[in-house]
Length: 327
Ligand code: TYM
Image (cartoon, rainbow, N blue to C red; front, side, top):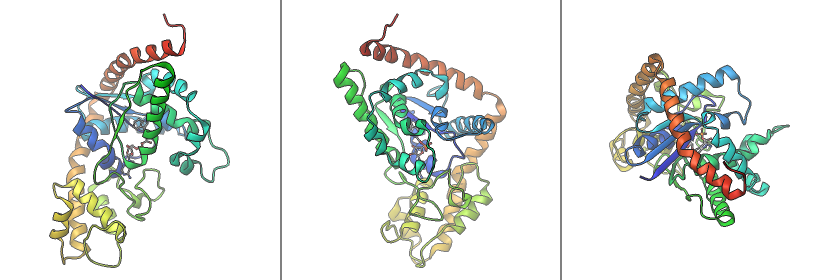
C-alpha cells in the first residue's frame, strides 16, 4: 500500500484554509493509503510559543484531525515530538542542505521579514519537514499550495542522499486540491487565509461558532460589481468565495455561477455561510465529543508507537549508509 505523510503545526487556530487545502484530503486518502498524520510541534517551536498554549493547541489539532474524519485506528495520528527519529533524521538532512536553498524559501522570507533576530530553527525548518516525509518513504504528501516549494526541496534532498549513499528514499509527490489549494483571506484576497493573521475577521476558524461564521462571511470583502463569476484575475475576492462554496458543497464552479446569475452577492454570501456551517457544525460536535472523552491520549500513544516502529528501520538504514556505528 502506498504511503501518505502530512503534518499541521499547532501554532494557532486551524482555519478553513487548512481544512480545504489539506485536512480534507487527509480524510480522503486514508481509504486508499497507509497514512501518517502528525501534529508537528517541533516545527511550531521555530517561532516562540507560550508553553501552556502550545500544549492546548497540540491537543486541539490532534482532536481536529479526528473530528474532521481521520480514523485513528486506521491512520497513524501522532505528535512529531513523540517519534524522536524525526529530529534525528532532520539533523542528518540539515547537513545535506545548502544555505542557498534555505535562503530561497518564501516561507522563511515571509516569517523572517522585518525581524531583528531570527531563530536558526526557522531557517532549517524545511530540512526537518523533509525528514518527516522521507522517514516513512512517503509516496504522496497532501498539502496546500504554500508548501509546494518545501516539497520540491524534499525531493531534491531525497535525490541528493540517494545519489551520494545509494538508493534509500522514495521521491514523494505533492498532492494539492484542484480548487482551494490556496484559500485567500476574507479581508484581502492577495493574502492567503492564515491562522497567524492578527485580524480574526480575515479567516474562518474551524471552531468558530455558526453565528461568527455567518458574520465573517457577510463582511467578507467583495468588489463593487454584483456578478457571481469565477474570474481570479479580475474578481479575486468573489472567486475565492466561489472556491470555498465549491469545496463545502457538492456543486461545481459553473453550477454555482448559474445558481446566482443575476442575483448579486447578498443571496450568494448567505447560502455560502450556510454551506460552511453545514460542514463545520458536525465537525465541531465531534471535536467536543473527542475532547470530552479522554480518548485522545490513547490514540496519540498508539499512533506514536506505530509511527516509531515504521520509522526505525529507515533511520537505521540511513545511519548505516552514512557510516554511523549501528548495533
Ligand atoms: P501549516 O501548519 O502552515 O498548514 C497546514 C496545511 O494547511 C495548508 N494551508 C492552506 N491550504 C490552502 N489555503 C490556505 N489558506 C492554507 N493555509 C494553510 C498548508 O499548505 C498545509 O498543508 N510546513 C507545514 C507543516 C509540515 C508538513 C510536514 C506538511 C511540517 N512537516 C510534512 C507536510 C509534510 C506547515 O507549516 O503547514
